[in-house]
Image (cartoon, rainbow, N blue to C red; front, side, top):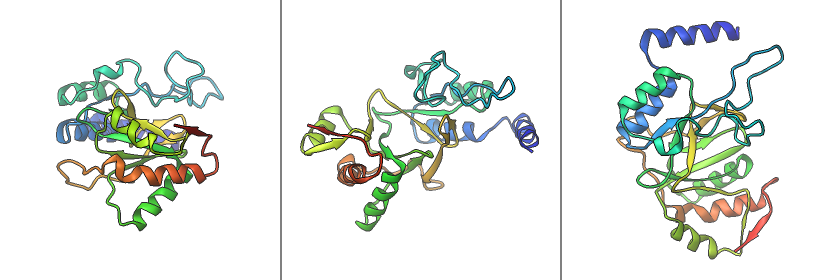
Amino acid sequence: MREILGMRRRLRFRRTGRTEQLDTALACAAEWQWPVLPGVGLKKAGSRGDRGRGCACPDPECVVPGAHPFDPGLLAATTDPRMVRWWWTNRPDAPVVLATGGRAPCAVSLPAVAGARALSVLDGWGMRLGPVVATPTRFALLVAPYGMEQLGELLYAKDSVPSSLRFHGEGGYLVLPPSVGGTGQVRWERAPLAGSSRPWLPDVEAVVDALVDASAGAPGGGSRLAY
């Protein structure tokens, strides 16, 4: 059955020249002016028993298999639709990597259990949220661009911050749906509104309190780092 589905997908790409990854990358680059580039991806299944879940990069102990830039590197991220088409025409299943910061969104990510809890709290506050990316292990809330000085002031005001909370700012990256990484399928927990000229993003100040509190109380939330 997997072979049949894979064949159908390859045939669809040959007929249309488009995949979901290419559609997402073009929307980011051409419509929203978010710089993207293809991620390294996972190894192709080869010998018997190899499920192809390892990273295609040279590091045998890669901690984010498939879900990071490699060749090209992060500095190659672009909003040029011609470059985007060339990349994904040659690698149609490559993960879509967003280069965060600058004029592009930043993000705050946390364990999936804590992420679900935080969304519930923010919904209860009537908070307007932007897109939210989810993997089987983590949620990432896209927020308006922030600087390290701004982030530092926010975190300094906290008694402590869980080490499981990660900040994707200037010089960082985030893998977008419908990519696949070592932890599984990347999906939209809250998708961008269809037809929007550019997704709306909340300020990081608006969500950081709920994210810190949810991460601190969730199983596997990590140790607490004093600031």
